[in-house]
Length: 264
Image 1 (cartoon, rainbow, N blue to C red):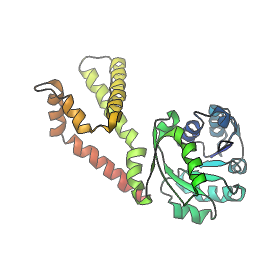
Image 2 (tube, rainbow, N blue to C red):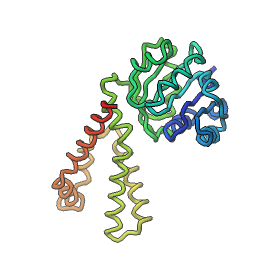
Image 3 (cartoon, rainbow, N blue to C red):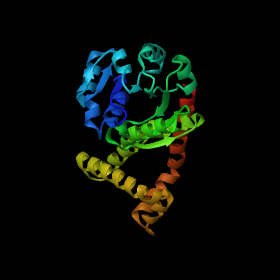
Image 4 (cartoon, helix red, strand yellow):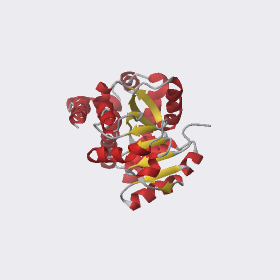
């Protein structure tokens, strides 16, 4: 039997539902074996409806093979206390709680098998980036976990000391890129395109650039140079960006986000 055979979600906010949808993306039968728990009934119902699962109590969700804990940090201790008595021996708790390291999770729920993760919303579509850290698992459990998480996207195992940086890139990165895409749209409109045209083109450029960078793990500097013809349009625009220290500001945004993540 493929593991997990059942999936519980505790906390049906945006990230919780994204994880739920991503995990069942290639396994619709797992969606139907999912249990969603949230103190807000409408949120629980929305999450269950997305995967054709059912609404249940925290105890119901905790009785599943894989439990996604996606509550706010302030609610994590109470949620873990509620979950702990109902978790089976071979079950795994997948925490997406920001700022809670493995030690803190273990102290709040001793004896549970816990995986710390830092995903982003793109896991819903199988295009996410998920940083993970976990306790020492046996080979079978590690293999099961890797297979279960694979539908989410790129899975990167990291030491916990690097989680603040992963939070900045994986968690906050989509927000930063969205701002840049907004700027692309505004520039297109200022240059004569309609808002709809500019939005479609900006999204297509983002997707195409991602595909180019994914090809053979391309160096972004090489790609930038390839599209910068002598006396051309790209180099003219790049000079404006460099004069505005855009590169430094973007790097500083990542550093600031990582610093804030370490404080949580």
